[in-house]
Length: 191
Image (cartoon, rainbow, N blue to C red; front, top):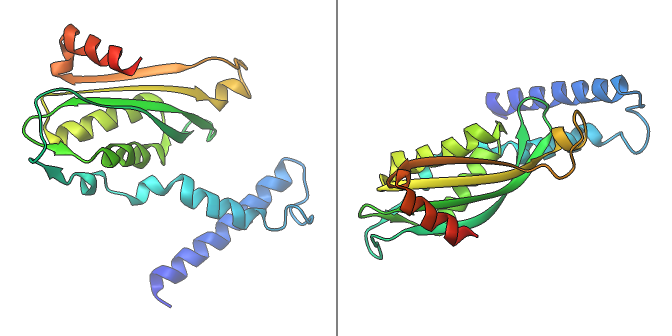
């Protein structure tokens, strides 16, 4: 077994102990039948929920000249699930992305994967929206990018102000989409 595996196992054991303490803190018995395996399951769940830390967005940017165009490309309503960095509670919704190529395009599934890279981290919606747009600008160098994100936040639904129907929308607008006509065309396409 490598040193990295030993360290990873030690971290998992330490985290499982911490999760047992948390279960005890909230008033339950971490040794009761239904909770005995919960620390292990939480660790496995967190590995998936926070897998964005292990992914490098630049590796998604295999681009193509073949099939390129000079018109807007839109990917609408990519579902995502993320965790609020303030309360470690979920927020979830959709992201729509538009870009105007500048001689290169990217595979559509790569845009959806880019959303996952940033959503699968402790996040705030505002930053996530900008990170998606800025990464596309940096690696694809399009004429313009627009990203619209709409989400519900469990920290507002289940605690605090308890507003069940509140939806937060954020946008990141770069390059050619600062032009009102381009922006309006995108908004019409995602309706």
